Image 1 (cartoon, each protein chain N blue to C red):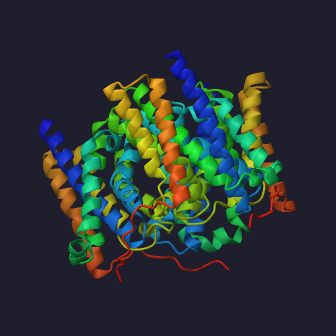
Image 2 (image 1 turned 135 degrees about the vertical axis):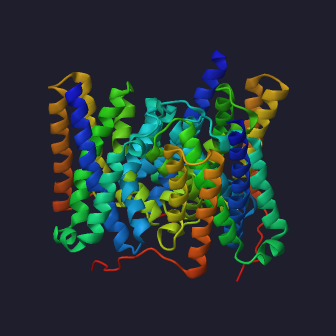
Image 3 (image 1 turned 180 degrees about the vertical axis):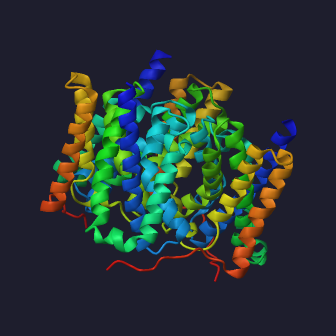
Amino acid sequence: MERLHTLYYLLDLAGTFAFAISGATAARQRGLDLFGICAIAFTVACGGGVIRDLCIGAIPPAGLTNWRYLVAAMCAAGATIGLYPFVRRLNRPVLFFDALGLSLFAVTGAQKSLAFGHNAEVALLLGVVTAVGGGVLRDVLLNRVPIILEREIYASAALVGAGIVVLGYYFDWLTTDWISIVALIVCFGVRMLALRFHWNLPVYSIRKS
Amino acid sequence: MERLHTLYYLLDLAGTFAFAISGATAARQRGLDLFGICAIAFTVACGGGVIRDLCIGAIPPAGLTNWRYLVAAMCAAGATIGLYPFVRRLNRPVLFFDALGLSLFAVTGAQKSLAFGHNAEVALLLGVVTAVGGGVLRDVLLNRVPIILEREIYASAALVGAGIVVLGYYFDWLTTDWISIVALIVCFGVRMLALRFHWNLPVYSIRKS
Amino acid sequence: MERLHTLYYLLDLAGTFAFAISGATAARQRGLDLFGICAIAFTVACGGGVIRDLCIGAIPPAGLTNWRYLVAAMCAAGATIGLYPFVRRLNRPVLFFDALGLSLFAVTGAQKSLAFGHNAEVALLLGVVTAVGGGVLRDVLLNRVPIILEREIYASAALVGAGIVVLGYYFDWLTTDWISIVALIVCFGVRMLALRFHWNLPVYSIRKS
């Protein structure tokens, strides 16, 4: 249990940093000011987790009460501002960090919901919400239709990751740590392959006049 | 109490399905992909209820924990995708289903708030939030000003429905079930008449230069 | 403690009225109808506080359960509709009332979080959320990028106000009431000076091609 908790924690921090980088990059490209960049970085990093914590009754939300998340988000915002040429040199930084954060958050989100004693459906839905909630808030705040609703395998990858965690928990495959690692790799793999090969979900384009 | 609970439950499921149809139709017309259609359908169906449950302390929210809501929303999304010509043939499907869901949710939202022991104002406000919350989230996600704020008697009809429930509860008119039915019919009637005769609330158009 | 509570209460009501005026003015200028104006007024007035109360576990949120807030918001909406020429004559009414509400809410938000036993980070973040949450919701509902993320010292002023409250609480400067008054004046002053002299936070404009 202790080891699981430590694993949660490290994954959560890494995901926080990765998402904050993606948020700060989007905010900077949109021309927001210093506060705007920090606020969007923090929102993307902690928004999904805060919604999850409100829904499972973890009050106050970990994203607000644990200074390490705030520090991770501010470091990411600082890096995006100060080391932008470096961040840019990582080809497609937004997409890569996004995929990493997505996988990490889907797994930890589903696990935290299960750890609070909620059922499989809550864990599945909140795994997806933890993973994509921050990105949806980012797009709503930047005033555009959330990119995840329009194209590409994105939330679906999170659904796969959260699903593996939930199935592993109920059918007692392997240890929890190994399941986490498998779920992480599968989710990240699905997302990267979808990006590489331009996998898309079907769109039903018969528009109504 | 048992019978009331069953009534709640059936109304809630029917409202969920109706709202999900309206959400899926809007998402499909906007050209979202499969996941986007399902996500918007679920958000419209359960968004208002989740906000209500967070505010009254019903953790975890019923919309997340009860698989029947998820199944109802997914069936509605499936019907909108697979049977679109049929859904379209119902003239103005979005408007009709919207009015039905609106009435159902305003009544159940107000009743659930009262059943959790909260006061008349909470019941009134959360009745309206349950009814219009999903639609507002839909419009925010689809990146437009929520239609309910701009024109037509819509949220006002929900306010009337929730108001009848609250008044009936405090002044002990009829039985709770009869009050629900009266509130439902009045709310649905107001909304359909408003659509038919283009009733609008006043707009104050002196724009500031 | 009693006196502190009364102070909270009066500040909260005054802030509610001020924010509701700002929300109703923006909604009216956008051409929303009667319900839309009332809804935006109430959202701006109580939205930040409701998010704060959900995060600190104050269920149901004070903004929904206390009729005085609703009455204050409706009076503000009524004044904006009925006395618009008067409200307009106050030069830049939106900006002035906004600055007043901002300061009041940052201070009361941070204090309420501390009063519920949460730590300094929660108080700081929720002070800012209480202050700017309503305005962000207003801009999201009116379908634009929240103004506070793009330019001017706004949320930063709230951060300063909340910071003074938190520091005063931990280092036990003066009495709580005096700290509130100092924090209020500093926050309001920073905001008005920023407006007067067009202070802005830096923008990092190297856009990615």
